[in-house]
Image 1 (spheres, rainbow, N blue to C red):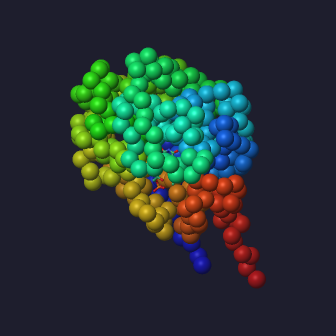
Image 2 (cartoon, rainbow, N blue to C red):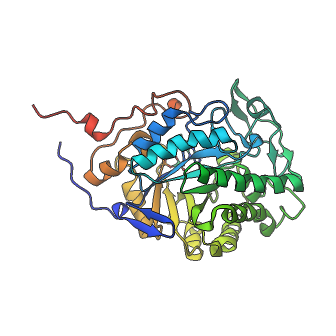
Image 3 (cartoon, rainbow, N blue to C red):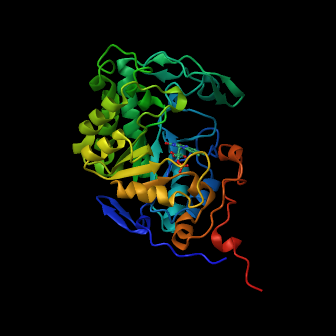
Length: 370
Ligand SMILES: Cc1cc2nc3c(=O)[nH]c(=O)nc-3n(C[C@H](O)[C@H](O)[C@H](O)COP(=O)(O)O)c2cc1C
């Protein structure tokens, strides 16, 4: 089979602020549950990320900023010296392989369980996650979270800032604050999950306050040019029901636009939607779009969807599963080469090297001509 080389705008270099990237393809953050039970990254993770170092930017999977923020078993953390040391191995391997890396910081809020963290989850309000949650003992009914006190809100903001300092000490170029997909920051944004009657709830201005304070504290800790923010407008993951999506995101963007952040990262970015267009119109900084690929990754690995996003004003394109299954995704897109499919969805979130570091690069799959 002959492949046709592709001249895609996704392969153009990109430079802005602290970002100096050889191409516009960003590896989206993906939790792979391969850390030790205390959240310390294991050596295998260094292999996995180094294999993917040709991405323009890697955003490493969610790391927990404090004990109560832990979502699931074996996810990574970034609140102790051992976490910093473990992540240093990963960032060193990626740097040696020529890559650049941010770390996502995620607090689960109501997406957590005493059977996992040993603690009652904290959330904006005492509204449980619908259904069950995965714990070390299997799926359990979700726990009822406790509404955060003002002191706990202040402490959590400080934990995010400390986690960001730790990430820099661990060798990351920056951090991504996770305000998407139904975790703590997103829970503050939505009407259904945030029923507070104090300054952190009620109006849109109240519901965005916590996210704005976290971002500002993290920016003050490590410099705004090292801080990204991920949002999922209208996203329903983890039982979210925002209510007034079209009011929340313009207000949030306006509140943060002048901070000089590294980027804003939009999940399920659809150029045809009013909310995407409104975000692009208001946000003067770098915009990363994570296109809507559907349940099955298309044969082009998201190239065309990514190009449509660039045409609609995104600066960079984040892809998840295509990078998971293709360590050399950038080369494969450049060469128009076929892609590895995701083999086993179960192995996304559990296990060792199988389904993790054993996806072959193109060179390993080529059979020499007879
Ligand atoms: C295995 C897996 C783990 C994920 N973990 C995270 C995560 O830690 N943080 C996050 O913001 N999104 C996470 N996501 C969502 C991805 O970043 C991305 O938004 C989603 O996969 C859609 O992009 P894709 O169609 O290119 O895969 C995860 C997705 C997958 C498949």
